[in-house]
Image (cartoon, one colour):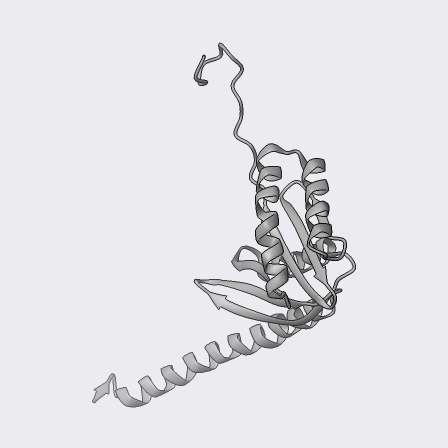
Length: 186
């Protein structure tokens, strides 16, 4: 078939080759200019044993396997910053994998109520003391617990096994003063 004196098959073949070249170049740039450097930088963060990128639902997650870290919060922040710099709004989340044992998983289950109560009430000193008591009772090493505006970081160790958890803090809803409307008595 001809279109203005040109064969349609040739036009389509050239268009397909051009599209493949453009998409292939984009993939190569992404792979060698973004992904490899990001994985390399993430792998050098304290405590990270392995790093990989996983694409899911239009976002890119940074999945890291952690070993013992001197400062888990600092490592997590570094990983979050690397991901945000590389992908911006398309960056997903940092997913932490560890080498937790059944004993550490059980300890996290036991501590979850204490952690959730601390999140709900803001009584972080009491939460820390209770988590330390629970760890001691369970025969675990000294727990790592760090509270900041947006998150609580928990690290548990049992010999060479580690468990890391990041709990997101939600801001408390505003409280209306009595008589100002909005509250049950106002």
